[in-house]
Image (cartoon, rainbow, N blue to C red; front, side, top):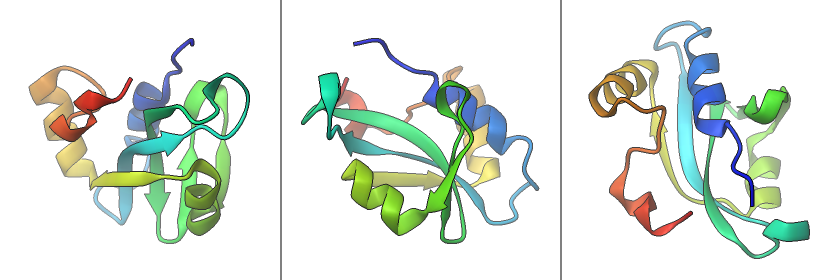
Length: 107
C-alpha cells in the first residue's frame, strides 16, 4: 500500500493557522473501512479546530464535523499537539511525525 503525505501536509497546514489559537495537529490510529485498507489499522494525521476536522492529506482540503470524521475512520488513540508543541517536536525529531512511541506498532 502506498503511503500518503498526511504528516507533512497537515504539519505544513498548521503553520498557516493562527499560532496557538486553538488549532491542533492530531495523530491517531485509523481503521480502514473499504478497499485495500479495509480493517487495516494505520497512523494518520489531521488538524482540529473546535469541533471541526481539517485534513489536507494528498492534496485534499477536507473539512467535516469531528464526530463524523472519527466515526467514519474508526479513529482511536489520538494525540493532539498545539502549534508550539508541534514545532518543537518537528525540530527535535527532524520529522513531521508521528512522534509518540505508542504509534510504533502501526504501519
